[in-house]
Length: 164
Image (cartoon, rainbow, N blue to C red; front, side):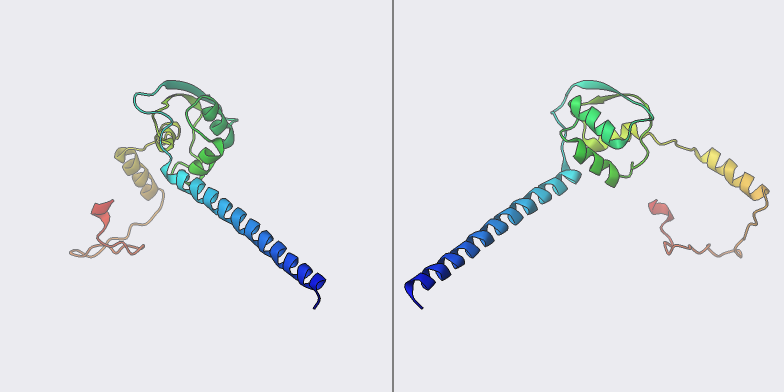
């Protein structure tokens, strides 16, 4: 090999190492951003400390979760509307946001806000009992266990009734 071929080989190797270093840098940056975003989904704190500011928002039935997130971000209740979308998607309140006028506070976490705007219609034990009696009267058959035995659980959670 002559000097020109050595120079081309060395420059080619340096170029490949530089490209590899740039790729590794951007993969590292992307992984760091993804981790931080993922962490914030479950650990995002409130926008401000106690006592915060009360903010009234109106949620109409034509607003989807992204619209609600943008509204809340514009009012200073949350930091990131896209993060709110993911938090709602992964929460137990997914799909349960009800239209209405709500007063929220900037010292609330997203979970606390979702608990307020995703009001669940609670049924009382009396309503559940009345519904069960209506079902039995409508033709369902009741299976009774022999005396002295406990009914078996269908989902394998025997003896866990007290834990619920």
